[in-house]
Structures are given as C-alpha cells and as structure tokens.
Length: 277
Image 1 (tube, helix red, strand yellow):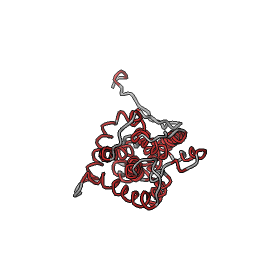
Image 2 (cartoon, helix red, strand yellow):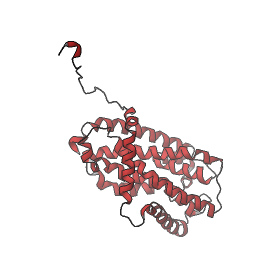
Image 3 (cartoon, one colour):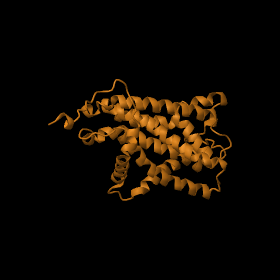
Image 4 (tube, one colour):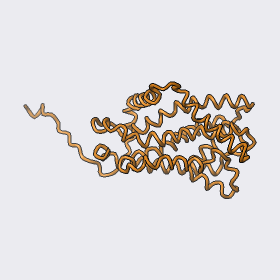
C-alpha cells in the first residue's frame, strides 16, 4: 500500500482532567428516549391498575396526612384546605422520591448494558428520572381537580410554575446521580434508601408549612433543597400569601452545588463502572 493510501492511525489516550462532555447527551438523545419509554412500560407491565398507581400513591398519602396532621394534630396550612395543601407538597416530593429510588439502582440494574456497549453512562439515571415525569403529570391533573372542587383559582404566580418544575427535576437529578454512582461502589446505598427517604420526607415541609419556623431561622430550612421546591410549588399553584423568599434562594444554591458536584463525581467514576457494577 502506498503512503498516499495509508490508513491514518488514531491514538486514544485518557484525559488528564475530568470533563463533563454534556454535549454527548444530545448526541445520545434517542437512547434517552428509548430507555425512558422502556422504564415506563416495564413499570406498569402486567399491573391491574396500570397508570392509576401514579394517582393512588399521593392520594393515599394525602388522606393519611389529612387525618393525622390536619384533623388530629391541627397543623396549620397557610389558610388553605389541608388536603389541597398536603397534596401540593406531595406532588414534587413523589417525583423526588421516585428519582431517589430508581436512579440509585439504575446503573446496577443495567449491568448488562453497561458492560457491553459504550454510551454516556449519565443517560441511565436521567432516563430513570424522566420516567417519573409521567406520574407527575398524571398526579398534577388530580391537583387541578382538587383546586376546582375547593374553589381555588390560579394567581399571577402560576407563570413561575414551569421554573419550579424545572427546579424539582434538577433537585431530583442532583441527588440521583450522586446515589447512582455511589451505589455502584457501595451497595449499602440501596439498604439506606428507605430510611433516607422517610427521614427526608419529614424534614421537608410537606405535611406542615415553613411558616411554623420563626422568620430568622426559616432560610436555614432551605439547606434542604426540597424545602424551596415544595414551598415554591404551593406559592405558584395555590397562591399562598407569602412567597418562598430567602428559603428558595438557599435551596437553589444547594441544588446547583449538589448538581455540579454530582456531575463531576459521576464523570470521574464513570470509567470504572463496567468493572465494579
């Protein structure tokens, strides 16, 4: 073979620094779609109630909260009917808890796929999260029906609802990618998830309003990233008298910090997933 027709040699070397390469996610967007659709179909395959489970879980939790916190404990609800107040808090929480569970086990559950073909591993926890958005949309219809039943109309704050939805997704993704990467190396993660989820639920103002805390201490509640999400949801959808304010600012900062750190940690550990999974 003449030098003019020689096949060029390509040398692949490991990078010296951790790079996010988020543009790869766009190149593999079809894979994200197919994995998300697969997760949705597998979740409700051979179930008698199907997508109705997306409604039953938050509705049952709302009923329990309404009985024990609303009627027996007389927990205030910012002047709103307690069932609507609790359900509006459970809506983003269910999305977060779903991502917490599904994302943390996503890499281990896709062991055969990871060990056989290359693709950005970040696709897997993202697709697990996006599968939960379908439940979120179905549950949102129930909240709209409850608002109509109790005569609660939307206010001008409704225009911020997409932003709080995005914040809920980013919060779920931030925690999900941390746990998914940690679960590959430390299988203890899946055993601590039930305790972590239960503890986090009561540390989040889902069953109670943040107004129970004195004003000077309220921003500290924002160190829990879901606190700002839940309070923002109620403010945008139900038009409560006070906005999330400084609490939201702290939650947004924590979400961005967790997400940035999680992305770099995930990318740093990505090369060893196939060996450890």
